[in-house]
Length: 153
Image (cartoon, rainbow, N blue to C red; front, side, top):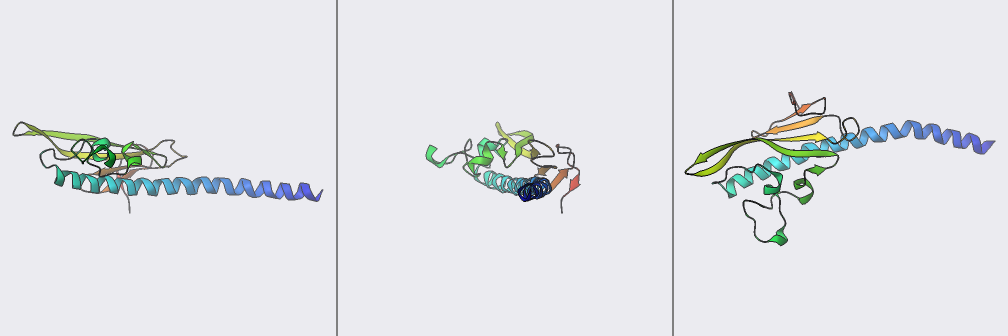
């Protein structure tokens, strides 16, 4: 009888603790997404400085790359960590979108871009979607998409 009481108490405690743990995991994923967007912004600034004739990168792959593949270049600048260049990290999907291309001296140059981070499973891996523009301002979409209108604090 005592064993049944102990097991019942443990089950009740688990039912209380598991939802809180899931919420903490989603919050940690959101924090990681914001930091990853900041890393993308820094990598874009470095890319523009290193490859001024290209402007900015319009893909995460161009910002990434492996040092074992040789020296950095405009297609693999080696500025982002490899897990972020795949577009999937900590329950979020990352992408660079809305690239504006301008032709200068017969050379295509990316002059503007936006980065997005959306939860892979809204409500589970994260609640908010995040967007970052060239200015470095990060905004969120409480619905978990890319309609980012709310500035983050």
